[in-house]
Length: 209
Image 1: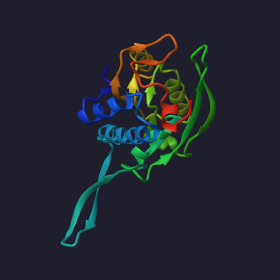
Image 2 (image 1 turned 135 degrees about the horizontal axis):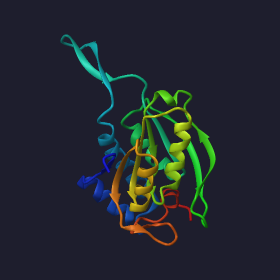
Image 3 (image 1 turned 120 degrees about the vertical axis):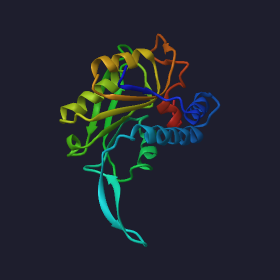
Image 4 (image 1 turned 30 degrees about the vertical axis):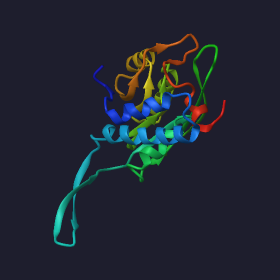
């Protein structure tokens, strides 16, 4: 899958290993999610467009490279995606932030929208969609459809852990979207949870059950 990047960075894998531990408390879990998002974001954004501008240093004038055009739009899928936002904003503080709210039907495992608020000029921005867990792929695929309906064609998805089933579905339904995965896990269980996974990311981020 040429549009998929699965990271092999030792720091990312070390932090994901701590995330998986059932004994990792919510505070540390939140901090790790943010740190992993920053590490993944650094690599995912290496193709951002730049242009040359002239500045004056204390010594002389010189031409330097700066980001070109509209900045990013960071779009977390509520609620677990919120945990990754600050990790990306640490890299690009000027990015706009939108939100997409989806919940998954426990019987059909299909996503349902309850909220969608994106920047007005999202069609002119590169969108980074954030979802820590790519399980069935239904929520991420639906969120990408909402973004495309706003005229946006430059979309990337960042997920910390993915199941093969969800990754395959996403690549088939959205082959034009670049996907960045921290770790590809074994499978989905009969309840649609990633194995070995880390449980419900939203519950562990916010300390709920």
